[in-house]
Amino acid sequence: MKKLLFVILALIVIGAVGYAILNGTKSEDLLGQDPKLYLYTINGQSTGQLNATVPFTQASSDQYSIDVAIDLNKDGQITDSEWQAKDAAAYLVQNLKSNYWFVDEAKKLAVNDEVLLKVSFKKSNSSAAPATLEKKLKIEAFEIGEMFGFDVPGAHEDIKRGGSVPNAIISVAHAEGEEVFRDAMTPDLAQDRMECAAVSAANNLMSLAGENDKLGNLPEFTGDLIEELKTDMKFNNGITLDNMVTGKNTFTQRHNLPISTELKFAPTKDDILKALNSGAAVELSFSFVRSSSGRSNTGHVVTLVGGSNSELFVHDSGTPEGMDTLRMYGTVQTSKHTFINVPYPLWDGVAYIDGIVIQNWTDPKHAEESFTDAGEQASEVEMLVIDGHYFPKSFFRVANPDNCKAPHYHAVNSDDTVYGLKDKNSSEIVSLRDPNRDSCGFGRVSEVPVEKITITFEQSQELIKYLPTSAVPQESGGAVKVCGLPGGPVCPPR
Image (tube, rainbow, N blue to C red):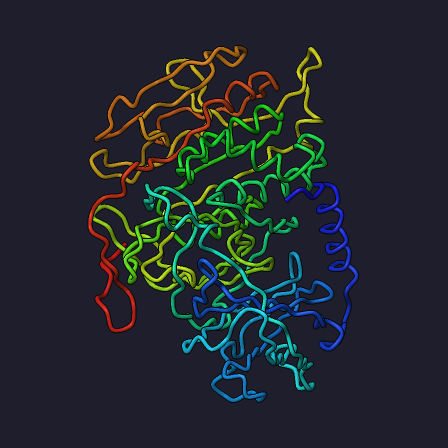
């Protein structure tokens, strides 16, 4: 935890350089020779679930596939049933480590056992022989009971702590559609007790600051960074999603980091891919409900580093270092919302994405090159002009015609309030409540004037204090209804 930020980001930069110079390297030269094998434990007892971490030597944008097997019955041989990761996609990106999940149903394996691991790795659609690795590994413990606070009172899906008793593995196939990965390298820090939200935020803050030459604005040690975020996010045996957003805004303002934060509740696949394609740094928030072992509902947050139409690629503070692959698989419905269902290996119930936190760095190049007549740093922002006041367009959402019979504006904020500048030359903030919540809101899109104006750094800092958050209920409420899964009910149109 006490690693220097500069050391971590220096290592990340080295990985990025490798990505740029890679050209036609053979599979056997890309497969690392130091895999790790972890057994998840709760209070020292096996959960029956393992994690094989496979390293790679260089980054590549080419497509690769991988097979991984563990000698689960300890007979010294690999049988067909022990290839639990079969024809899985291998992505040579980010920190160049990927995690693959295994289930030891008989719970024969224990910490410190030496077992055989075998890997077969090749470039997709290549006729060349695959690279192989066969090695005996000592199983290391990965304790999750203390980390996720299983026995701490107050658990709820709106409180983000971590996972629970492991679930059966969902086989990971190749992604559907083109994969999108965040260009900037992203750390994969480990969490301590129930601090997944703060650690996931720290990963992305380091990534954004690193790619914009602002690492000096962050605390020197990662431990200090995480503790400061926990304070800002009002940590209390976990962190609520809305406190995560407001706390992050408090942190970025104090450290003079020009980062805008948006919370999108019940995101669609398109919302997630759009955020990735925009270059944003994104955290995924999960609700965990209906535990088959009777655990209380809880929640978890991970750092998103890539995605496709079928899969999510994440840095998860609750697993060993390495990129985890999660598969989107149908939907989950409550009485009011439809969510993306994502089977999570460390939860033995229903898991779904309840929100995403999107961070964007305001364009530094424009800010540096744009100045007011008085020589002040400035930037351009699209504003809605209402009653002579100037409100950032991003503080609004466009609603479907419904009762208004035309696309119209409502506030992003859950309290229906927007904030803006008294006039284009003022730093004074004014507020406006939605005057017509059930109809045309702040006005039809075709009728509300939109003006791009140049605002000063001082005006920008004032507006950042009022960045909106989407409506996030403190209590999810309602019955959870699963649909869209094989053999189950069909989902209604979204």
